Length: 275
Image (cartoon, rainbow, N blue to C red):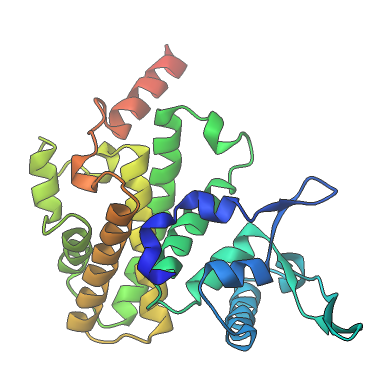
């Protein structure tokens, strides 16, 4: 399966999605196991248990996201036995991907898909798809702010003292060697103008994934030392870039820069409210 990674995209995971009698979406663990290229249930069940623990540690009830769905299966001569299975929420699938074998390329694709989709589901007032591009930008930018704040705390705990160098390592991986300053120059931004405020929703989403995956990797692998943390950030950025390429996506540096920054849009909003 891993040799045919280019055959897989977000539709791969949508194709095994189920809608229950109450209109709720779910995935079955046994079907996800096959997609994620786990041959043995024993090993995949181990990943599920790690995901359950992560769910609990995030102050969510695992029983709400990992619902037992055991069934009786034929094993020959008319005999049957119980087969363990779970109905999984999108968040549960995201946690499984997070705790899966990172050497599997399909795992990286699953992480990307379920991370973005889970973030989108956090919207409460309207569906993400109904938002305008600028509304999506504001939403994604807010998430990157929160993500960077959390990432900075974790990075400092890993021994990082130069946060600018640390963040540039991530940008270099994702943007094929470009630093934050290089990105700003390419976008023709003014001195010290925020590059994230001048990204479209797709580019922001790629950076959000870089941020969340780096934080997760630093914590999961107990990374320590500035050099090791910087290398981790670079590698995460590079891995995300490779996933984008394999999916036939547009490289971050090739995505268009919005005509107006989010600060400009925010200023216009305030003037309308005042005016």
